[in-house]
Length: 363
Image (cartoon, rainbow, N blue to C red; front, side, top):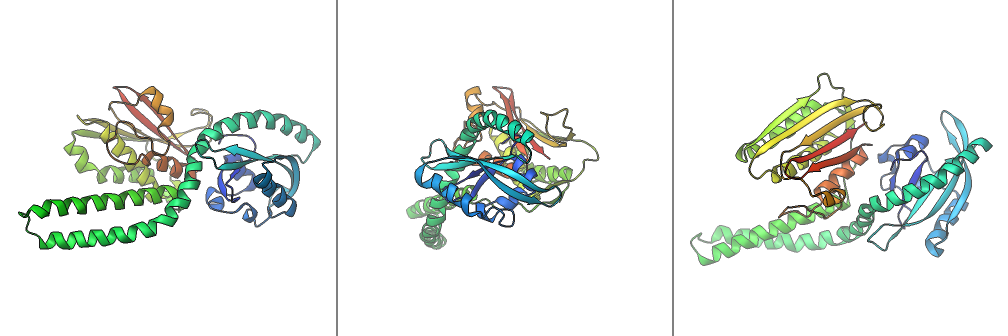
């Protein structure tokens, strides 16, 4: 969510679904500080204000909205500031669940009050439109999280029992027996069910990022090495172009590796007859890359069959698949979530019959 004013999205339980960079910068918190946190627990409970509590709960009960509710916040460096809260329900798209969008403006002085009110109307119109598209995934996450958390345990227990009996019977059955093939199919399909459940749980309940100084060049090399054998078998040439003396970035190396491997696997699927997989990493400055802050760009480019233009805007939607015979279509959605939790962004460019390029921006 790119906006000059802090924005916060809450689910019906008033837990944080997402926030924009301006929110994190203004209130001096990170995405990890807000993940799965109740709104009243933010900022050492500075948000636990009885009147704010009443207004937010009234939105949920009576579908109301409120504007310019002022709250005094104490910030460590700049001291006390008066913040004006505006909140209303927004749709999450396909899901009937209604989310709450909270827009916050600094109204410490009258000059700022007038300026922020003018900007607020313009920003809210644009941001609401963008958020409704982006929060299709968040709306699915809210519903899917509730469902998967309650059913995973009940489903996995009988599944593991079936797998156990199937494996025991397989070990005791002669491979030449007519029953052996049927038992092998049962074993294979139960394993596939187990993998589906793991994918759903990973999407609905992503692990928190454990950020530390990470060497991107080493991470790229390691992730390519993991798939070297598969690349060789499919006649795909890996090419790496890493800028020298790249600085380290604050990242969770395991999660970042997961993103890269997922992009490589998609690239392999897009090049069934072989091709070239190119991975680049370079520093980027604010003036040269979409007016973002200084950071790093990691790109993964293939020479495959590309993505149809009408499908490019849908590529990060949960459960969307393009020319794939297997999988749930959650991989790119999970990648987008991981990159977002790192304060970054992932984009895609594609041309039919020429290839696809994914670009990961990390601050």
